[in-house]
Length: 151
Image (tube, rainbow, N blue to C red):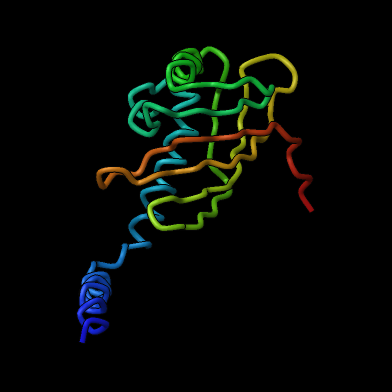
């Protein structure tokens, strides 16, 4: 009898877990894809409000030159973007979910106003976390790579 009583709380927890709503991965993927596209475009537009909403306060990133960034430095970089970039657009995107964590990987192509190179490509990995029902980027790593050759 005592063994059965100890199993009761476990069975109740399993029942509650089974009743918990399943995450809407289609909506989550759209939210993250839209966020990645907005972040790419914000670089050329200088849209600090968009970037500020996407990045968690404890965000940490690694820039293509290897420097470590935080939210404040990302916002400053975004603010000066229009003086350097003509455009920056998301061209590849893939995301995997692990509970309330998502790992997004993709690429964006950019064009600068001057300097060499004038055109380029970033490939990146961003870690998103859902806190309080809201997805935000907590970590990112970007690499600058040559544009792929068209076949």
